[in-house]
Structure formats: C-alpha cells, structure tokens
Length: 115
Length: 111
Image (cartoon, rainbow over all chains, first blue to last red):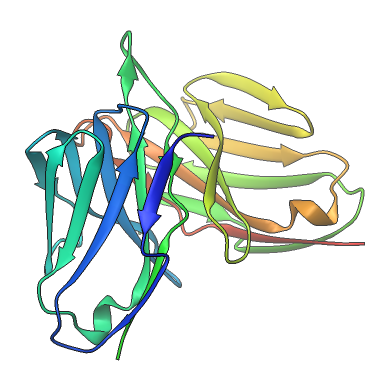
C-alpha cells in the first residue's frame, strides 16, 4: 500500500476556530490533493499541489488554504471553520513516470465536524 | 449535467450474480479510474485505464473512448464486494492530473 497518512482521523471543533489537517506521504510523489466528500456530491477538489510551494485552487477552495513546504507534507487549513465545512476530507497522491500517470492513492480520510 | 455520470446509483444483487456498473463522461480524457470505498472506509484504486480492458481477479474494467463510456464488471459477486464504486476521469482540458469524479454507485451483495 502507498504510504500516505492523514491526521487527525477525527476532529470536532467549534465554529470560528482554525483547523489544520495534515497529509503525509512517503512515496515522494509530486502531486498531492485535498478533496472533500459529501453525500450527493462525490469527491470535490479543494486544493492541489504539483510540487514544493506550488499549489493551486480546486473547485471548492473558498474558506480553505494550503501549504506545502516539503515534498512529503501537504497541510489544509480552515482559517475560521463553519458548519458548511463539516465533511470527510481525503488526501490523495499521484505522479507521472515516463509520461504515464500513476494510479491515485488516497489517505484514510479525516472526519471533521464543526459545531 | 455532471461531466461524469454513473449508473445505477444503487444496486442490490444476490451472491454469485454478475454485476455491471456504468460510467459515461462528456469531456476528453487521458485516463479513467475506478475506485472502491467500503462503508466508513478509505478509497482504494481498482483500475486506471485509457483504452481496452483490464482484469484483476473477479473484476474487469472496459473503456470505449469513442463512445466516452466505461464499465466495471464483477463476476461471481460476494458480500465482501459491497461498497461504493466511483468512476473518475482525468480531464485533458483541465490542469495537469486533475480528476472529475462521479457520485458513485452503492452496491449491496446479499448472501
């Protein structure tokens, strides 16, 4: 299995507090992604990274920021959590080798509840 | 209209049945992924394909690029196959490596 770890696995926080989720990989993959999964919506991309300090927005980036200071770590921050950000968050990694894309590997998810 | 549509949304089968889940997409793609998610569990990549057919154990995935359609087949289904199956496409027109996901097919295999 690909070495990808998310922390924490579960988090309950109050509206207005900052929250940081961590994704750590040991595969040295260039691409890292943060998705949220909500009933009826499937997986939606929040932010992604294509290298250290190289990040870009996804389709649901409002209210979220990310940082990638090392290849292995991709942090997702909710500056001021809202109830609409209650969701399950998944980190994923992939790469290209000899022009071919690798499969996508997912972390086990973080269940975030904002009260 | 979603760019990736899966059918059916829900499927109940008896153990041993042959199962087909369909995925249609409307964008040009470089690859299509089939993923599996067990209840409360993580997401596992089953297949990545850009043409033809792939087989792994009792699972078979096919893709028709001209028709923009893929199918996931499960032969001799078993209760442990009960999960959500998700189709995702890598959009040629999008940023490098971005994926568009279907909303998933919930499969329940009854003993």
